Length: 474
Image 1 (tube, rainbow, N blue to C red):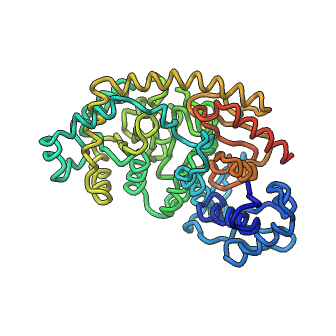
Image 2 (image 1 turned 90 degrees about the horizontal axis):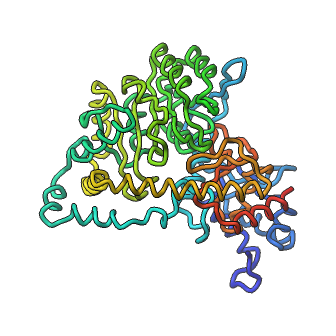
Image 3 (image 1 turned 180 degrees about the vertical axis):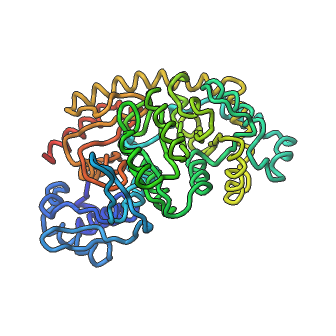
């Protein structure tokens, strides 16, 4: 709320609010600012105040005026020169337009560290901190930081592939998922995103085509585009990826890699079916591409869920996971598992980027796994999430929303009935960061969908604000 009695004028306050959002990428390059009339109504100021604020933004070089169209955030940064491809029912369309994925993802990434307010944030991708609090994590740190132990592994580089104790624990953990990987086939990383980056840098070169599910993880689109890859969006359905689109891509572009979230897909919550999994593997064998299976949500998913890596035996698949979602986002412990003939190449890439990974957190994590603490913690989280999901779904439906996918896992894919890019800006004024559906597409397109976090949308207060803001937009 702008303050009439504040030390700054209303014009300065409004200009600074927009400037801060542009700097934080909460307003991406090319985004349209509200019309003068809309902005005046929204912030309860006169149109002349809005015009003066927009003039300040123009003078600062943050926005540009387009005749008969309005004010837009200036194109201050550009994506790397790559071409994003999409599929139609009749074939593959090559878009000459530069992909917007990096700018879209920057909005979400910066939002992760942007304190909109102390309210639960519907757009966040992790569990609330109070869900992750435990007594066993501090105990694990104390266990591995005795003076002698600390000196033994802190005063020299760690093992290149990662702590051997953790890799043994991970090998046993994967066996429960029917994924057979020896400790020698596992490489630890600085989170799951680092693991995905290692795979990309090992198997791909700039210009290579890569298939990625759409909607999908915004950061993955951005990361691949930043490396200069040609992103091939594959529509994701309830059973799995659109196999006809994948087949057409294979014939037209010979992709080198397919990135997939088999279990509790982000943002839809879909899980891969066995029939679809077998056909994906058949395509991979026929057209000679690798599959990266991102199983970030494995800790809240059933062990018996269909996983490509289990069916394939890590021949063409590379399994990636981490512990940020379930344990501690700041520990940044992830890992990958791959075939013996590929794991050495992946390890070389890791060493070129980070040398080794910090042994302290890896040893503490191994203790958590071996003592059964992580398993019991995950069970408590799953139980709590089930309750939260039921409550959040009821509140969303009562607010007049519908679900574009059956609610499952951590995220809901919600149809709001209004443009969620515009909704996101208005909700920021209310202290809420939401994740518009456009963020989850390779080519940013306005739409009515948004992703919600079931753990952070149980509060009826959020939905009351949502209804008020949405209804004002209609």
